[in-house]
Image 1 (cartoon, rainbow, N blue to C red):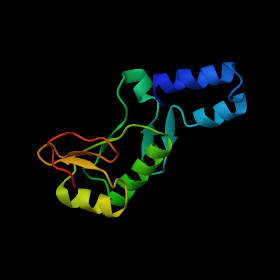
Image 2: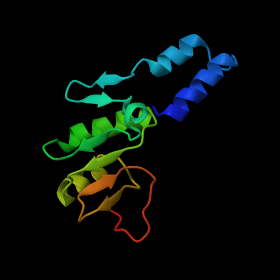
Image 3: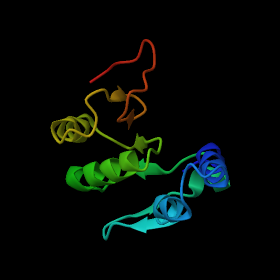
Image 4: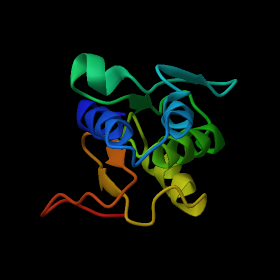
Length: 122
């Protein structure tokens, strides 16, 4: 969750559009969520101004896919680093991002709808 979403949520509570219980449900994963094999930092965007980054090197594509799905459920921006072509292809098969963008020379990808003009798309 970033600062803007947090402010919107608090304003919704103040204006009685969201109950306190509903707000707590949305905030219960802050600042961290333990997936058992990874600990996601949902509060990083608020603290650092930049969201969590997933280091793909050394991680199994199934685990990366689970991390991506969890981050998407929380409406977080996603950046994967250190991905080789084989791992990216396996992630595509696991349906982590049909619109994924990959920059082969940088070995990074964004499994969402973000596009970079003129870049190779897988």
